[in-house]
Image (cartoon, rainbow, N blue to C red):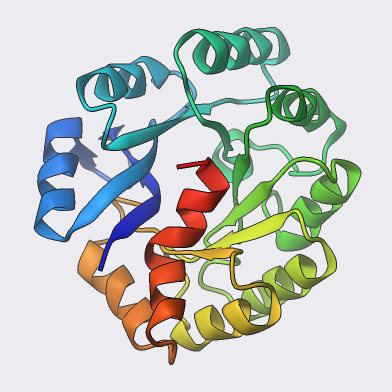
Length: 242
């Protein structure tokens, strides 16, 4: 079964994480687990060049996202136009938790406006208070209904946040869900059946999670056949225009 990983990183993750992953190592892992393409971002907003180099090395394997910190407004706008227009990046990544901004803060609006202008999706970390809760991401998506907004981790490890991610996505048809790090396989099936068949996507969050763990959550979710193909590949491919 073809797979597209809707969320992975390369780079050096020091501090509490204490590990790293190169583009070459990621491709080896993709080959081992039959992952055809990966939606790729850096370790933080300072290392987009690593992703550009990876994309130039393997343009058929990676769909790059430009990682931005909207608190650095002038730098962020330059990054967005440069990487998307000049380097062919396919979308935008933000991490409210690590960069310490609330997802629906007004400082995020210029990023969303560029996303709408350039017609690219926005991927936002979801599931940790106080910055990256599903309600805040939903308020942002509601203000920008023409921007396809992906809640990465769809609430992560907290049952209340997972439930809220599904509820918010049912309200707003521009909200999409990516399931890496979210432990409840049954919620993948629930998302497919109640949010939309094309709005729930497989991801690994490499190098933080192993592909086999994330794959098993999809395989044991209760979905079968064509539904599994949608979650593993078709939905991310449709979102990214592959």
